[in-house]
Amino acid sequence: MPFRDQFFAVGLDSAEQGHPPSKFERVFAKARAEGFLAVAHAGEEGPPEYIWQALDLLKVNRIDHGVRAAEDPKLLDRLADEQIPLTVCPLSNIKLRVFQDMTHHNILDLLEQGLQVTVNSDDPSYFDGYVLENFVALRDGLGMTEEQARRLAQNSMDARLAP
Image 1 (cartoon, rainbow, N blue to C red):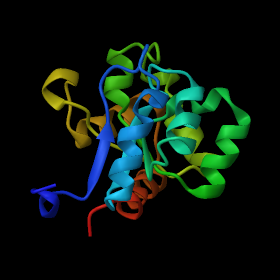
Image 2 (tube, rainbow, N blue to C red):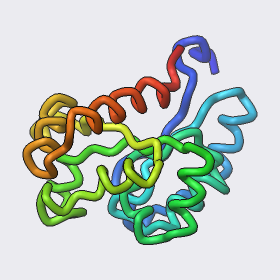
Image 3 (cartoon, helix red, strand yellow):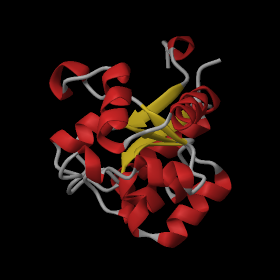
């Protein structure tokens, strides 16, 4: 807490398998009590249940990744209704084998279903790309339109946590 003025949010990241958000419920409750916003990796390598846990137990403001929400229609409805941002990192999703290749990625489907998805980079030196390369991969692999690119970019601005 001596450095409270240096940051405004806490996050849960790294490998999801075997590390459900429920393991971190107490620390996130403490962080929220101190006034911090919260974000969590959930639903990239982990199942949709991890997204539910992040929302209900950690009370996050944003889900990092979240692409496996597509496996749970009720979760999709909630994410769309509450406009919970999903910070999607397409190139890392491919490298981690969440999707076989970019032509199978679901980000544009999620966008068209009304979810507040954004395009992001994830450890660019490891996953081979910054934000621009992720946008290019979506254009080349999924035929993303200019209008979809604009919506994704606007979602990023709308979803930002920083002032």
